Length: 207
Image (cartoon, rainbow, N blue to C red; front, side, top):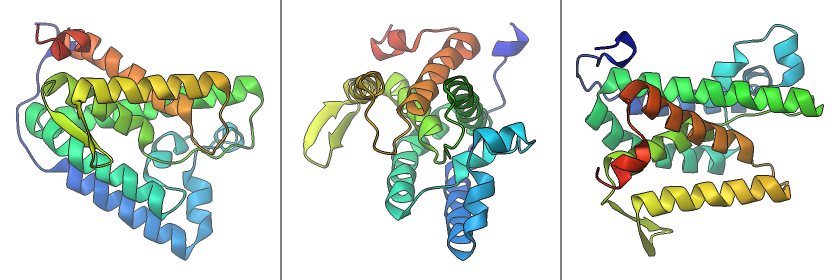
């Protein structure tokens, strides 16, 4: 068995709750001192000045209460089940790696397009990857969008991703980092191919 595909020993340490707790703590610190968000958010100029930690810390800072609430709600709903399925170590690696790579990708896009003044923050890139994993591992699960519209998990995730793709193409500017969301989804897909050796689409089809 390839080292890159060697499974970790399974254990469930409720990492999702620790991640949620860290996000809440950082948000509280942001309210105490705005400089926390300034140094935690991913900013191209900041990274070029040596603040490379922003590739990690941007995932734990948020732009407002609603931003935090919806991200943490999604992390709880989807993340708990995914962590129970693959184990805490695998989940943490998946979450952090896809989030960091989404940040690196976003930095590259901002740098190449001259968008140096952007401050990227939020866990959405990693959460899009978690939603992909949920759809792959639980393809028959039904999610009630807005508590009303029932959709199978793969349809919901692929639908949201399509919306993000269209929004990024038509250049919707509403403070939402569509490319970061897509990058999280894309790196999640690559993780499945490289680490699990299986296309997530085949999981969704039950093959």
